[in-house]
Length: 469
Ligand SMILES: NC(=O)c1ccc[n+]([C@@H]2O[C@H](COP(=O)([O-])OP(=O)(O)OC[C@H]3O[C@@H](n4cnc5c(N)ncnc54)[C@H](OP(=O)(O)O)[C@@H]3O)[C@@H](O)[C@H]2O)c1
Image 1 (cartoon, rainbow, N blue to C red):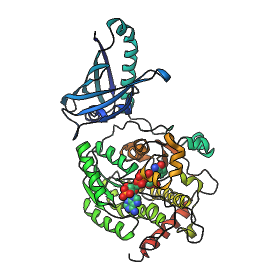
Image 2 (cartoon, rainbow, N blue to C red):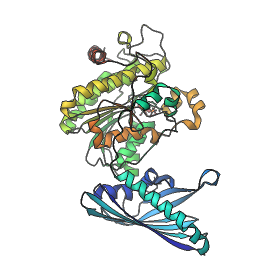
Image 3 (cartoon, helix red, strand yellow):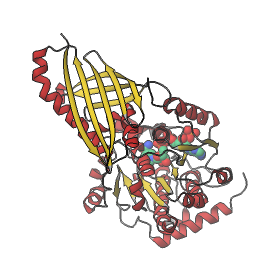
Image 4 (cartoon, protein in one colour):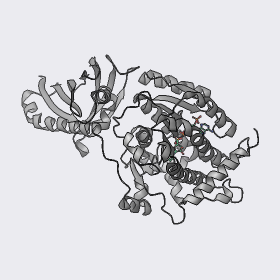
């Protein structure tokens, strides 16, 4: 009793056929743009191409009537930038999606046909379901159009800032109730992106997505085996092997400098993502005699950004993305005691102070480096369930439970800031879920330009004075 239905939509989008094709043919992104899909992933290895397979979890209905079922798709025709056919199968239905891409003035015409065979419904039921399925198809294609048309960049908003200042509504945005992962249609093919901390949590999620977008990744990690595993996983899942893997314990100035020396031969660098970070519940000093939170969360991102400035400038579109934290909102910057030697140590406060410093430097660099064409962004990933959170904040993880975001959602803004060309014109801001937010919630915690410049001087002095390990 299988019954057939055809859905057909045509849309025009302001983006090249190559970018449209890349987003659509990689069906693992469909959950990012089709509201009727709860999850999607690539289940075959290597680059997307003929024979690639995807698992898509289709969702329908609402509330208690919500129904989810998996469908497995395979690419059965693959004509780069022009046409792709995906054939899907599940217990409930089979589908053939035929999508073609035609260049038009200023963009691409996308012709999307879905031929569905409903296995469990007869003709009568399908007639009733027809209008509903058509609505689902229209919503999917409207989502695709939204994903492919460049969206305006959100401006700073006093209302959003007020939400942050009221703390509770502000903090609710940090949870899985925030907007989460969205589609990215901008490509990074050929762009060299240096990413620290790619071996776990948010960095690992960002590495996968950047690699999927075509970036030539330079991975910096402290553990040679974890780095090799990460590089293997990226090559296997996306077919895009990293450009390089560099080993460095970023808590050490000497190793950070050594990695900069290695990077000096890499030519122009399009983006640096300062993601590596840690929260230490006990005060400790590195072998070079620097308090470890300051060393990992502030000094090393500082040295990397300053050291890579000429190569970022050479790119002509250089970007720095500093991964900060909303924890910063509760903490000012004590220039006189950056190392927590004069105050009782508190891991959360030390972490927040370091992130506060990184956000202050973001603004300083944005102003000073604008002439080099370098944009500098700070972002907050929200609260995400990562090995770092499980290790440092087990109680927080337990209490928050499912309210924590997953790593993909936490990494979304990080990747978007690295990929979106429009955001180049919005340097120096602090972003959460692709929107700029205030940097001051508690009075007198913000860092003015003079203090940020003094912080820069203090970090230069500190790095210059380290004792050899
Ligand atoms: N998760 C959240 O809710 C949250 C919220 C706000 C901000 N953040 C920030 O997001 C970033 C990523 O955190 P995460 O939650 O994904 O933590 P994670 O799972 O612990 O990952 C941290 C990454 O940093 C690397 N790293 C740590 N210390 C290093 C060192 N000394 N040298 C080189 N690499 C080092 C780790 O390497 P190994 O794999 O070798 O350990 C790992 O790759 C951090 O900057 C964190 O402060 C996270």
